[in-house]
Length: 321
Image (cartoon, rainbow, N blue to C red; front, top):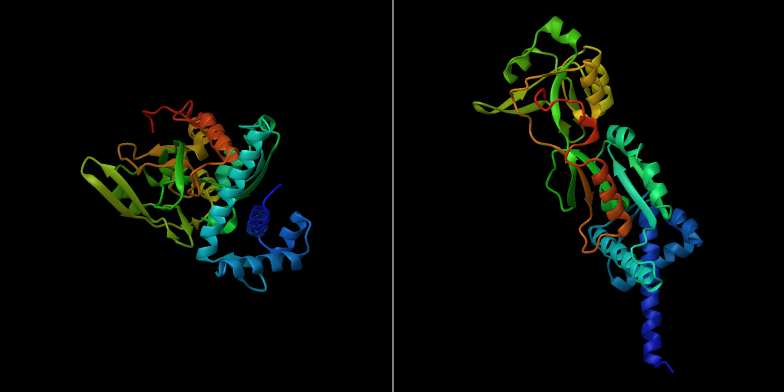
């Protein structure tokens, strides 16, 4: 017979796991009502469970307003640990049932809009066929989102990697070029040095955090920094690409975005003797000891598809760019 103390301990442990599950669902769903629908509970019950959890922990986990919920700093840390614990429990159960290594669950991903449409979209069907027990939720945005606050498992990032508490894995290089159309170069001339760009119409990316109007190069004389200006600023890479193709001005573009245009001669790389800062395609995920099989499998899948010589660069001479 089981000891009464053990039964009480077991019941308490199950209550804790249940509360963790409710909390994680609330964060992932973005609200009490949506989480309740997923868990087959009323919003009132979900709210009460969260209130009880906060009371037991003696800490506020969520900031509540009439329009939205957001994690407190303590809640963000607790969310990462809860998600990790629940996934470890799932892995342990899979091992006991002979399904160790079986990939399943919902994978929530965020990726840049242009890269997502060009390169993630085309690969998702193959991954889902390979792992039929995985469900994927994809959010394409050019804004840098808080992965923990938004409940994402994985973020795809392109460009220069900023300092972050997230773990980053490089999936492939992301070569970038300064480029313009033949029409623009024939009309305005070809810059021979980065400083010549101050006399040209330069098209730039702009975000709430700042405008990328300082272009950095490395040449024979060392570091070269140029403040450029032009008549188009956008937070969308596709708008930048299309305007450059149309002969509006000069832009810095990644080969993953303009490989076809470079091969067709619609865009011409310039200033090839000057090096741009290195960039890459990265997979970022929250810091945790054990990476869930669903996340690891998707990262491995992308790395296998991209790699050190990504498919979009095939046919583009390394000497030419």
